[in-house]
Length: 183
Image (cartoon, rainbow, N blue to C red):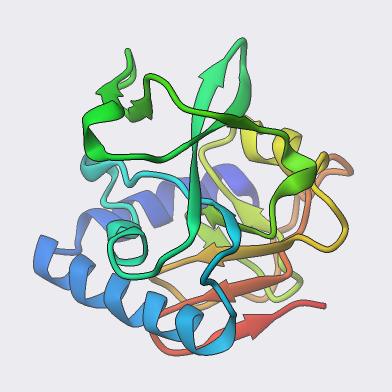
């Protein structure tokens, strides 16, 4: 199936989840990540969930694992990352997304782990996001040692038909039921 169709289907599937279901599924996702990866003391890129899009609740990770978290900030259609210090440094941007207003910037090459948002992923680690390519642009600049971990409420599908050369596949994906490896 093509990305546009998948995007529409999985946005709709997410809308069907209640806040309680979303939080329960998010907790299971991050329990699997904590069980499979050493996180403490690592430099981790993590997104703040967009509530209206029913995204995976990353606060479950941020609030429960000691690590150096860096949050994405949109600057000229590129993701920059600033160190997370406290909720007080976050402000809603023009799209209604919480972003850091200040903090120490880090270059992509220094990340140990990137927690990647997605709508759906296939059995090869190819993902469908919101279609702007911001994460692909960022991931291409990360170190080869960096682990790209997608988080999804839904299990992978067999194949995304219209994968592009610029699409960066993920190394892993955590769902509520299983940790998938695409290496």
